Image 1 (tube, rainbow, N blue to C red):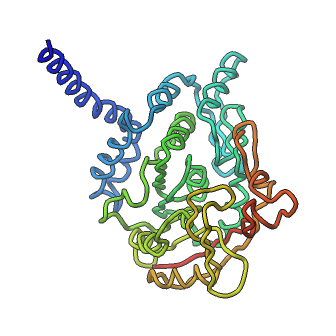
Image 2 (spheres, helix red, strand yellow; image 1 turned 60 degrees about the horizontal axis):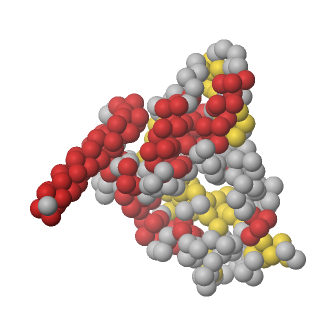
Length: 350
């Protein structure tokens, strides 16, 4: 009897092993249109490597909720698109027909099940997704400072659900590859794009260190809200440089210290309740880091304190947000006593 049970367990295990890649393969087909467009770009030699890495990350064991999120995509109402407005502050898609209240309720419920919505806002067939971050404010700060995106190949590292990618398409970018290792955000993108239906943009479930070493040729690379989450920030900047073609532009947005000198804050445990903030440099220090990564023509184009009007709790992100992370009697300090968040946008070239 012991032998029979062992054999049955072995067969069950082998069946599961053969089924897992199939699930990943089915999910990765949702990226097929984007990969087809890559064939006429410098990304062509890396398509299969990107596809395989994506399939690996989308195996059912990658996250306990993945099968539920994929089921949400299947249950989303099929609504015919009339217009998509990617240049609006609330990235929008309008329906070709009137949506009845039952369909509206179903759509709202399914989109809400992908909570929390960190980046946005989005307006999907009359549903206003009021995200935690007013990402349109950040976009407004940078779009007129960066090199025009017309016909450019763009990479957005740590892109969340793809909000900035849609705004880049509205600025006439040719193709936008977004990556983010958080599967929930990737599934949010797939839900959004199921309605917007634009395969010039995708969000793959990858981190920057998951990318093929030979991947490159991008005209513009965005790294926004990533640098301070890296244990080795100069290595991250060097990786961003490798992604660029010669003359390409890095758009770096990061937490900084608003003070002179080459200072770096290394939080003891947490910064604004975040556990994975390893270093916050002064603007002079981050400029020095960019130089150490062999990036040139560095420019600081924006320096803005983050306010509770820009980052806040909403019905679509009802966890704690910035107001909960600041000292109750001194909004210029975090709960831990560090300087409150200030964000800089810097540009640099390869």
